[in-house]
Image (tube, rainbow, N blue to C red; front, side):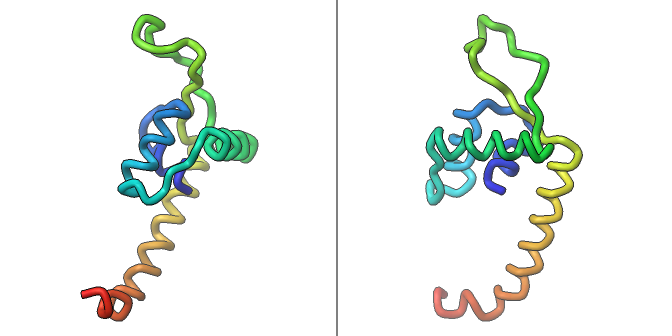
Amino acid sequence: MHVLLAIGPAERHGYAIMSEIARMTEGATRLGPGGVYTTIKRLLDDGLIEECDERPDPELDDQRRRYYRLTGTGRAVAGAEVRRLEVLVRAARPWALEAVE
């Protein structure tokens, strides 16, 4: 889920995905290359992401990088999981944060 959300509406390469995961979790989750690329392979195999055919200008980027984007199925899966988590958080919010506040 972290990788799907990190790619989001953009096209990202592996390092950018790792950086985005760290940013959006405020550093609470940090995935290394092994974890990210294993997940990318699984998401590719499952049809949730695809490798982009178009490449940035080689003068602006490293040609060895592979860029990924969500497929329609990947976007639907991410959306369904976000909705599921929203319901869960909404149910827990009234009592779960009492001890913290």
